[in-house]
Length: 210
Image (tube, rainbow, N blue to C red):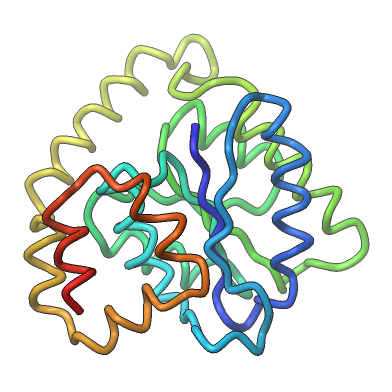
């Protein structure tokens, strides 16, 4: 699994710690981590949580990433922004049990975490445990066991509903403010991470054109 890490500007100073914790947990599992920044609070590319939502959608819809880890101060804004775009099923995680149950019950492809609220001593330990529960036991297996069948059925229904209620991303990109899109993909390492892994030629061509 290719996991993308995205940090918005208010919590960018924590990017290196979050990346190190994520890699420590998931790389021994065989997963790959791509860090899309922000890398420091002073980065020229300033990602708001709304831009994180667009970037998550770009990565997931094109196959450039299989999973996105993002967040903001509370995690709420990033979660709302991610779920505003097609192809993203984002959960809000605050503790390890959230990680396990979101993976098993909701089987999403994106998580938003609070990187400021209740993020003090032991924050990296809590992150480590969340990532262990999120990525360490597979996805969509259901919990508890007597709820597996209805949970898996409801997930398929939700996927079908989302397919009907969202426009294709390429159409949304055409209608979004060009400067907003351009600034979203202006990160220092976006091109080298995104284009080699992108599987959607139309979206890749559109982004290159701007």
